[in-house]
Length: 137
Length: 137
DNA sequence: TATTGACTTAGACAAAGTCCAAGTTAGGAT
DNA sequence: ATCCTAACTTGGACTTTGTCTAAGTCAATA
Image (cartoon, rainbow over all chains, first blue to last red; front, side, top):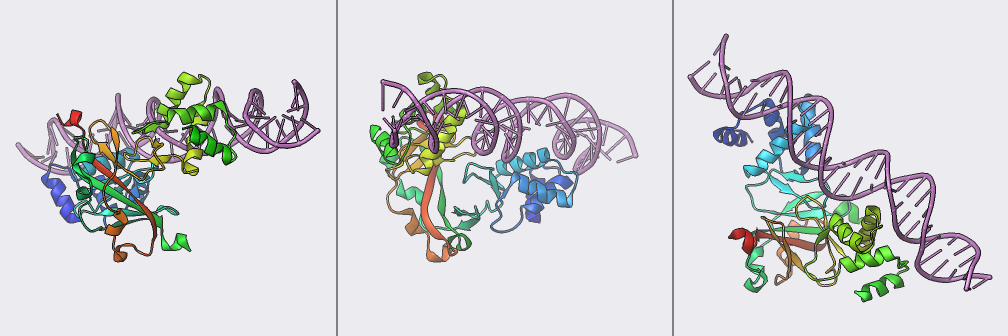
């Protein structure tokens, strides 16, 4: 976590209290908050932080590759701080809960050249869908 | 296509001119239009069709399993009429173009039981990302 | 501790989508 | 053929999510 702040500092970021709070809120495993959820939690620690700053900061973290943007449902985007460990997502169709998962093998290997239409392919995002234990009961 | 209208009729749909036009607009391969794009094309054939009806009709087609909803980018959802042939998507990070692709193997097989967190898994959506020939030039 | 350009703020704006009350119509019933 | 009515459509208001801007604030360097 504080590694993150150090890395950001090294890249010329000003370490404002707002940015620090956003980074703190995004700490942990299986964290996939929407921008508004990040804002709500940030406000608990820094009541005057604005929505615009949360959006700006999240956008910057994504640009720097420190946080991933996840769009699983066409609703609000979610922000995933686990950007330094390759992983995929398991989403509950009932309640929307998200878990990070680690499938075996390289998904790119499954796509034959004839199916690549001349694209230069850089990666693959997999969303597994199903019902979590609570929702399938 | 007219198969679709027949199937819808069999499920109790009233075949209004609006629904017919939306179904016609969604005909073809590699079609991944946003709701607004569907509306724009529908208006060319039926000038008085409203946005609300296009949204309603697309939602019903999705519920009936005739059309897939695709959220690749957190912008507007796209609607994919190719619901009866399993496929995945290849998305250009430059211009947003989408192609249907058919990777080999079953993506579910790559997810070990220990990574399923008790979910009942129903499927997996894969989004391959890269640059199309035009954008990589 | 003074300076300044980067950062933050509130609020206006925009895009995508939902909802509602009122009007219209497809298709079964007569 | 026409009537009836529940199902459908409509326009517009509204909500959610996100972007932009002008004015004010402040972190970091000197």
